[in-house]
Image 1 (cartoon, rainbow, N blue to C red):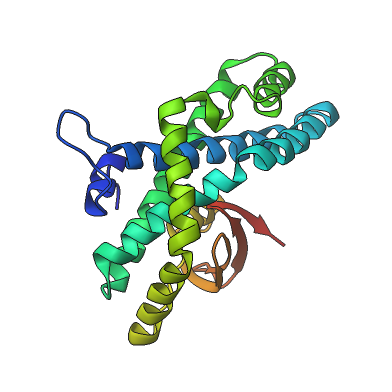
Image 2 (cartoon, helix red, strand yellow):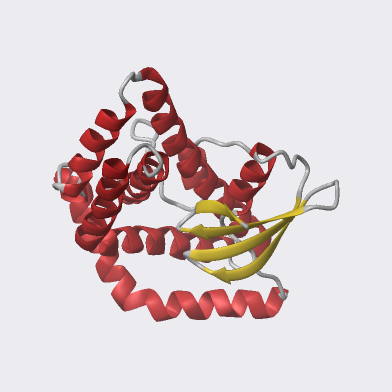
Length: 236
């Protein structure tokens, strides 16, 4: 299920006119989720490069999240609320849109990081330079004033409509008897990368942004994946 981000956002009402594919809200949601996921991808890629890069990665993630985490949560709320409002009791439709959105954000971030890491002769220097930009605020969400203002509006919506979202989600789960994990496609891709193509992926824990999946391989072995905000790791 590979769709463009604009097409997916169109399905949940976050798209503007044809001359401006994303509405201001859609742009803000994409901006926040993509920036956060890019940082997490850099952290994953740089932790094993050197001790200095690992220390910089952990510091950058911690400090960036202190300054920007509330707005990432607000962006995620805006996406989740519009999904559940538009798809209503068509839970599987909403879930698959959320899965595809999460998968594409992660894929885009990973591709950017991989291309830059492969094109440099000094990965340590690259990691420390990029991570310092996150750590020192150069890649803070405040950097785009218009989108930042929309994230502030989403934060206010989250505060006033957060309980309503949880009630709508609980009602859908009760009616359908189903729970869906947003990182499903991400785990499928990771399982294939780990030599387990065609894995049967099952959601074990659904407490977004934290999820746990079991991927059972055709040869009888299995992988356990833990995810946070769509960033997943295979665990022993």
